[in-house]
Image 1 (cartoon, rainbow, N blue to C red):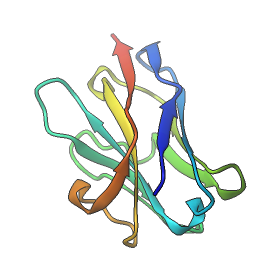
Image 2: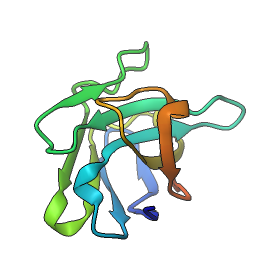
Image 3: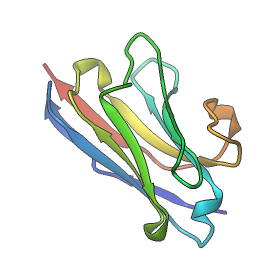
Image 4: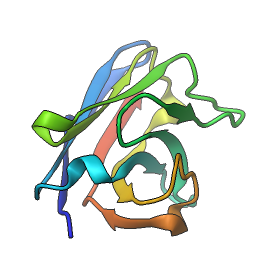
Length: 126
C-alpha cells in the first residue's frame, strides 16, 4: 500500500507557472506508474499526464484543452516523489489536481489506478 500527499497548488495569474509535488510513503514507489488527474467543479475527473516506473516514458492528455507542451511530469524515485511542472497556465486549468499510483503501463483511465492523494487546488485567474 502507498499513501500519496500532494502539495504546491495555489492561486496564479494566467500565463504563470506552478510545480505540484506528490510525495509517496513506503519503499515501493518505483513499482508504481504515477499519474496526475484534475477535476474542475461540475466536471468529471480527467487524465492529465502519466509517467512510467523508471521515468523513461511519459504520456500527456491530448484533449482540446491540451496540457501537452505546457505541463511536464517527472519523478525522482530516490525521493519517492512525482512532480507536475505547469507553465503557461490558463483559467481553464483551474481544478483540484490529484496524483495517483497504479500498476499498469502508462495507464490513462482513472479506474485503473489503485491509490489516490487528497488533491491540491490550482486556481488560475484571468
